[in-house]
Length: 118
Image 1: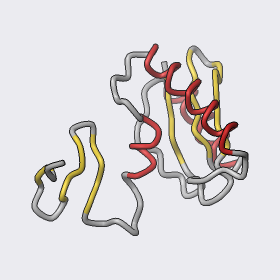
Image 2: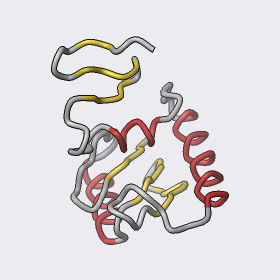
Image 3: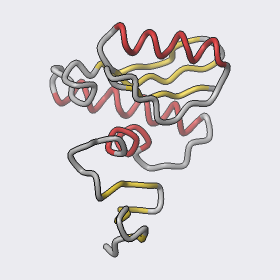
Image 4: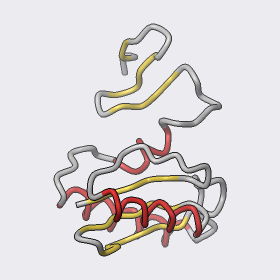
């Protein structure tokens, strides 16, 4: 099983699967300009293209939403328990937010290394 979020700068945050297949997925993501991809057993099951900096799509909201729903359902079926796995991964590497990061446990103050209360 494999699920991948990477942007045009080759920032692959979470990878599970064979090295050869992952290499092919990374090349796909780079070549196609950034996207979310869910794949299993060597097959791409769903994807969402993110043409703007590997973070945003030019597609209509309804299309993006429906593709995200499919992607989330697929990775949940693979065992992912995060409520928003792709969006959480997209937030982590952003250089414009160097002091805050989102994890599966919530918003983290990186400087103090502690969770920020809701």
